Image (cartoon, rainbow, N blue to C red; front, side, top):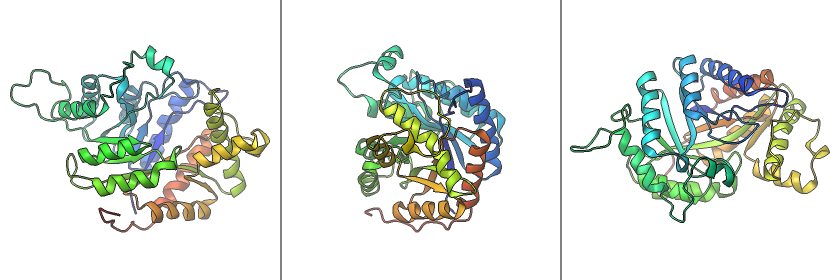
Length: 337
């Protein structure tokens, strides 16, 4: 068995409110803890009427308080939106309150459109300071150096584990250079997955961690029948189509067939982008998840699921846990693989 985790955007389904979405996220996390999930990560997004995880650190604290052993963290904090010192203080506070259960995944994208990025007071310049910001953030979470004038309080000495997120070769190169664990956004941007994984594993240098740790992201739509699982998936297919065509909104209700509401080009685009997906009845999902493990040899899998109905979403993740807890451990991988 390899560790299995959840990535949640706290989706707001059509007909629901942000309060419903946050209550559902808390309920899912509590169930996930009992089902053996290792981590529960929230993703930072802004100005989206379909996502309630914008104040990511606050939501992490709320869910950490509602659970006991589950690791809770960010997948991720979009670091260019924030000063590294403030992130170190926020996550240092979380670690001070909840101990060694807090993870800090960081990404380079804004997590929103450019107008909203400007409203976040993100500095829009030619210079890319992300690598330096990551190093600064890590330093703030470590023991202070002699004579260090600026410290994260709380934060200094908490050593909150930092994870690099990415969907391109940039994040893979930086994670390898700094010796960080690496999570790839293969659940919606799989095109560079093979190349990024090769770059990360073949160039990894011991740093923050001694060995590479790769987390594969996959979508999960599991149900008692293939037909029901395929129907549940249409909510996320519609949401992704809406996002890519410039009309994002609440998570749509499912339809019988995505092709009934999408053009052939839209259907092809969505299915290409979301192809790292396990969908169907339990045995079919087992085969697909095992296939991902055999192909990519991840050290961990993190599952994401945009399902409109909360009860169906719970059941999908329950099936996912039943399957993952029964799959064999992957074989060790060479550093040059």
